[in-house]
Image (cartoon, rainbow, N blue to C red; front, side, top):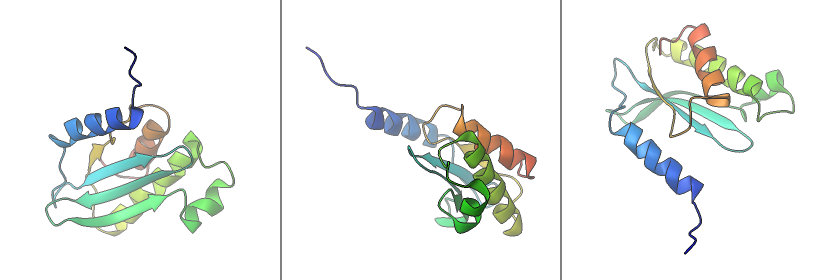
Length: 123
């Protein structure tokens, strides 16, 4: 019997498996990435307090002005990585733990992480 593979359920399982080990603390919050077909979002989260310290997305007006029309590219993800790193550094966060959200460390997710590293975040 054929059963259809549910990609979203598989990603959720992978994400929960990663989240068992990766938690954000006040000393080292979690840089969480969410990737959709059109956009990418990154948040710096302190899990003990349940607060988002910094966030950036391809939907932010600052990112839109730098990206242009093609938002689902590695270049757009790099802009989001730079923005979230700048906002995290402004909030007093320099070290984070990277949560890839169940996605492969490849393409847009890797571009975001590398841009955040170049902008000054220690992953």
